[in-house]
Length: 390
Ligand code: HEM
Image (cartoon, rainbow, N blue to C red; front, side, top):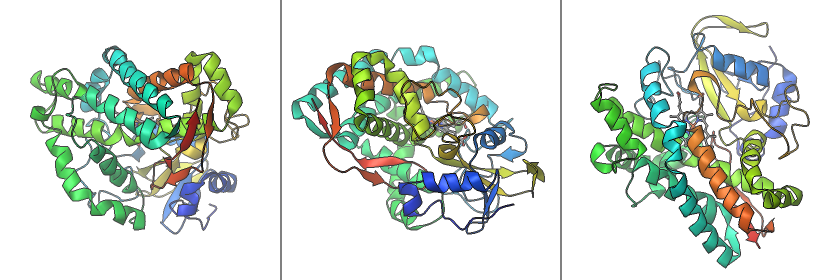
């Protein structure tokens, strides 16, 4: 098995990961990264295969670098993301229903109103930071409203998720910095997962209604609300920011979108492939196994590089090109298999509505300064994206 001395969690790789991914893909289907004692997978076929074999490649040992069977995690495990079947099946079925297409349709008008008001304000200003003023402002309004959260201190959701996504990687300086603030945030989050903190009619309330019907144990409902609050905000903000960066640096794509705003859904999907917000997750082998002829012992941590699989030339033609004419079905930006993102439809509807509103009303979109990365051990995002809108 090939071995590489590279650190996928270094600031250099997190800022610009694609050269390192190419190195990993070229080295082989499974590559040892001795620095962390892990195996990395960068090719689409193998990453997808692992995601679909949940008996051999388990999530209950954690989807980060830490093996939860031998070391404590940063919080009690998620009852969906960090669970294997059969434990995963029942709570996942509840979330599937709460976040169904029908349920999300009822939020479209509300998301559209948020987008309309926001785009009016942005156009009045002309120069904006698309991360703070657009991606975060929109998502922190639209999504927590739909969950049923009150208006106070919603920025806490961003800091909490930043900490959790850092915790998927090693305990490096980035993790330490975000962990410093995490303790008060964790109790704030759990308070806001209680039924009393959630408005009737939102996704959170519907989780508690499932509990009333006997579909969840009393301790499970707050944990499912926690899953929404942990996984639903930073990822969507990153996705919208990454998409706007792709569009602001590709004037032809923006003018196509301006002429046909309904292309927003394809632009968003292509940006998810091209610059995936959730770059990676881990699985752990439950037995001795093999991948592409490489023998792998039981208990090994496998680093699945979604961001790399989505740029694998074995799967995509011209993968390094952002192309809104492409239909990138099969990308792994939302994972795949039984753990595939249960909130992807909410994220897609939020982003499509916002992008369509921008596309309709903004003729020119361009960078007005140098973008700055937001570094996180598993989320790939911009921290600041100065844009000029006309
Ligand atoms: C563009 C935005 C988003 C991206 C890129 C994203 C990405 C992902 C990925 C890659 C996974 C699979 C992780 C794995 O297999 O280990 C996942 C799972 C999950 N996501 Fe998302 N996500 C997004 C938005 C959301 C939203 C809005 C919600 C909540 C409404 C959400 C809730 C979840 C949950 C609960 C899981 C665990 C599902 C399970 O294990 O069955 N995500 N997401």
